[in-house]
Length: 92
Image 1 (cartoon, rainbow, N blue to C red):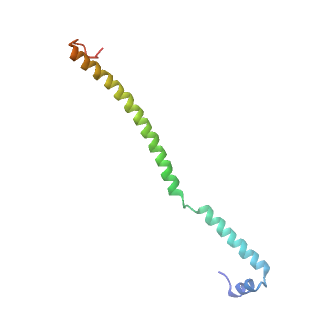
Image 2: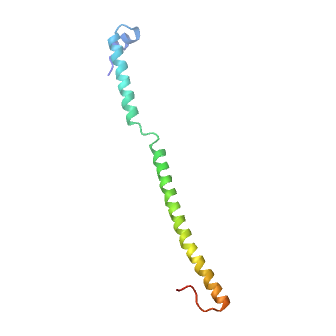
Image 3: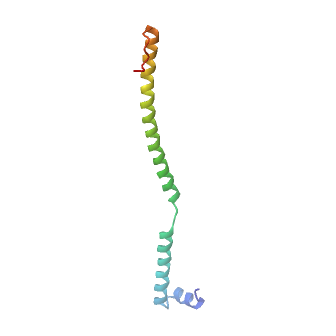
C-alpha cells in the first residue's frame, strides 16, 4: 500500500519520481481495467442473437411461401376440377 509520507511528498511535489511512478501505476490500472471491462458485451450478444433470429425468420418465411404457394395452386386445381366435374384433382 501507499506510505503516508510518500503521499505527503507527492502532494507537496517533493518527490517527482514517486509522482511519476504513481501516475504510471494509475495508468496501468486504468489500461488493465479497460481491457477487462465487459460492459456492453450483453448488448453486443443480444444484437447478434437478434440478427440470427431475423435470418432464421426470413428463411422460414421463404419456405412457408414456397410450400403454401404450391398448396394453394393444388387446392385451386382441385376446386376447379370438383366444380367442373372433371374428375382429376392435381395428383398427376
